[in-house]
Structure formats: structure tokens, C-alpha cells
Amino acid sequence: MTINEIKNVILEIIQDIDDEADFTDLEPSEALRDQLDLDSMDFLDIVMELRKRYQIQIPEADYPQLATLDSCVNYLMPRLEAA
Amino acid sequence: MAAGIRFARFGQKVLILEKHSKIGGLNSYYHRKGRLLETGLHAVSNFAPPEDKHAPLNRLLRQLKIPRRNLVLHEQYSSEILFPDRASLCFSNDFSLLLKQITKSFPDSAKQFEKMVAELDQYDPFLPRPKISAREFVSSFLQDRLLVEMLFCPLMFYGASQEDDMDLSQFVILFRAILQEGFFRPDGTIKDLLDLLLTHYKSFGGEIELTVGVKEILTENNKVSGVRTAAGEVILCESLISTAGVPETKKLFPTSDTAATFSKLDGDQISGRLSFIESIYLLDKSACESLPKDRTIIFFNLSEKFSYHRPDDAVDLNSGVICFPGNFQGNKEEDIVQLRVTHIANYDKWLHAYNNDDKTLYPAMKTQWVEKSKKVIGKIIGNYSENIVYEDSFTPVTIERYTSRSQGAVYGSPEKIKDGKTNFENLYIAGTDQGYLGIVGSMLSGVTMVNQHILNKS
Image (tube, rainbow over all chains, first blue to last red; front, side, top):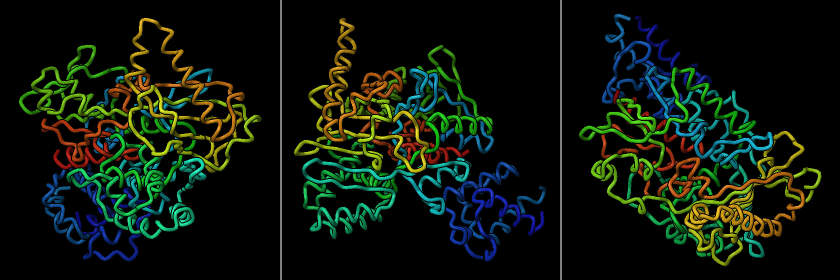
């Protein structure tokens, strides 16, 4: 998967959680939760959806690495290489 | 059901075992005379507008993947806390109404009330911490005894499992759910909502068995290995969530050792003592012009001090809840008006009558108390007894029989397990006994337990 493909997957998952999420001014290096008004329950949905779609296990200790769109890409890139 | 949906959503194998022939537990329904009657639903608390993303109702719907726009919700008109000849306070889904009412009726307490609300807004009720008396907390802000009693009245009736007081955490949850957020009803009946949830659950591959009660919880060392059903079938599982209640779950352990491992407290200590008698009246509409049209629920108290405990008599007629399930904004007008009246009742007295060899005793006792109740309620809302087309009442014994809630205690055990964990590492408690309250609360409980203990770990 390319960087853009991974970004799109994340945004698609967020859109699925909250179909009113607005990505127009989304800053990739800033926290997704603050920008999109997501709470910890929504955040778990992102993790679970990634597991369901790509069978990747994300341990709880790694959740902080999914904080921003950029950090999601960095974290997921090696894990989604085969996908 | 909410826990099941949450788990099934991510492709996991889930089985719900329901003892009854219908789902819903305390909030279910039955049919009489060709009409559907609801068992528990007066109103749903925790109303929130769609844009309030972090409100419990909207969080719940997102977690269950039920789009809010697919639901038609009817908000209450207004509800009233009525202590006749002393004071009345109205509240709606706009909290400012209650503030105005308090300023008008209790001008000396208004500032202190606002201070208390500011403190409550900062309080996290889900943090495990020692019990704090809500009465002491509220009284430390409000010196007016009458106002204190009036605030406790609706909160206790709609969720308190402890007699005459409650833990501050429970108070905060109820205060937010009822007074700050308010009441609504989904369009249609509780059956429509339950059907929607069931269809949704099945669409994710969830399985359900009705009329299959759990007889035993099977354990190996400190883990649950499965359950044995009443029919003797053994079903193995990796995790078990019990929504039966803490005292009821304790009874499912086949040995005293495993039961003691589950909870050291004995049945009497963990059983709730509060139960209710409720009457449902169907009234001819043309004859009901005098009934309040802009009140959804009236919480009333006639005695000097509002008492919320198991009464000495079979029923405590000094207080109660009067609900008009038709009085919600945008509800379709019907030819029949429904009225529901609830009073605190004594489980032991009703059980004694029910078990008596004289089988006429229990129905006669029911008739006697319901007739007395009609007189009390008639004085508050105007006489309605001549206009009754159909009526039915249920007692603590009925509640216990259909929901298996020990002693008919609808709000469960006074001992809540806030983190849902038990001494068995893969057995979790969800629902009322985990501490969340109301329909939205109980469902959020199921969601939260699956999120915290199963999805995060599996």
C-alpha cells in the first residue's frame, strides 16, 4: 500500500464511524482525535476495523502511534506492505 | 444485546442466551386484548441533540453502528416534581427550565444549586472510588430540605438501588440522564426498538437462543469454561458477559466455593430491596379532556419527608410516578390514552400473598391496592377511574417471575461493580449492576465492557 492509500483507508474508516466528519482542514501531523472530535470509543473502532479488514493486531501499548494521520502511515506502512 | 452487537460487529462469534421467550428484559412487552403493552418503558433518559457527539446516546448509537438519522425520537413536553401544597418544579430537555423554576420557588438556594451543578459537571462517576453519600453531598450545598427531597425524588424513582440514599456516582449519572439531558421515546413501541436491535445483531452474524436459561456457570480454576443450560446442554466459551445481575449470577455457580469466589457478600447483602407495583390504564380519550396534556411524567410525594425504601405495607401510596406515554412531542394522537402509575412496593408481602394456599388472596390484594391508588392519583390529576377501558397491574412478584431479577429489584443490587470485572478472569458483569442506569446506560454498559475487556484483549 502507498502512503496515500493508507491515508485513504484511515479516512474511510473514520467516515464510516462518523459520516459527518469533515476532512477539509485536516492537519496530518496533528492529533486526529482533537481535530475530528473523536473519543476513545471511536478510536477503538479504528483499531478494530483495521484488524477486521487486514488482520493486523495492534496492541494497546501501540495506540499512541496512531494519534495523527502521519503517525498512522508510519506505523501501518510496514504492517500493510503485503496488503 | 448491545454487548452482542458490539462484539459481532467485528466478526467475532457471539451467542446470546435469553431465558424469556422475548428479548428486552425489564424493557419488554406483552399483548392483551389485541394491544401491545410495554412492561418497563415510561421514557428513555439521556436525550441529546444529534450534534452533541459525546453525549451517551450518540456515542451508543455510533458504537452500535446505528445511524442516528434512522431513528425518529420524540422528546418529552415537560415533567414535574410535585409535592402538593408545598412546591412544584418542572423540568424538560432544556436544563435552563429547571434552573428558572428553582430560582422562582427557592430563590435563596439558586446560587448554591448552580455551584453544586458546576461541581457535578466535573465529577467522573465511572472512576472506581469509595462510596460517598449523595445526600450528604447535596445537603452540603443546599440547606433547604424541601428542595433536597424534591431533587432526589425523580432520581431515586428512576434508578436508585439503595434505600433512601445513593452513592454520589449514581447520583451524578442520574442527575445528568434525567435532569440535564432529559426524556424521549423512540417512535413506535419498545417492540420496534427491540426488533431493530435484533435485526442489526443478526446482520452482523450474532446468534440468539430464546427460552434457553443458563442453569450453571462452569469454571476451571479461575476461568469460566462455559455454561450449562436448563435443558442440560453444555456450551463452551472464551468469555462470558452476564447481564443477569450480581445476586442472580452468583446463584448460577454450582458449588458454594465457586459462588464465594465470585462474591463474598451473601444474597441479602447484594440483593436490591426496591421494587414496584405498576398499573397500566387504557382510557377512553373523549373522556380524558381533564388530564394534563403538557406533562410527560409527574413524580409526586405527599408525605412530610420523601421516603424511598421498602414500605411496611404492601404498597407506599404516599409517593409515586404518573406517566403519560402519549405526551411526547410529535406523537400520533390515538383514540385511547395510556396512563401508567408506579408506587414502591414490598416484595415480601406480595410474595407471601402469591404463595398462599388461598389463591384468591393475591389477586384480591392487587385489586384492593390498585383501587386505593386510583383514589390517590385521582386527587392529583383528576378522576380517571370511570374512563378506564382496560387495566392491568404488575407487582414485584411479576417482575421477578418474568425478568428473574431477585426480589423484583428493577434497579439491581446496591453493590455495583464499576469495572465489570469479577474474580473469574473471563467473566464480566454488564448492565444495571455495573452501575450504568436506564436503557441508554445499560446498553452503553454492554458496549463498554466488550470494548474494555474483550476487544482490547482478543
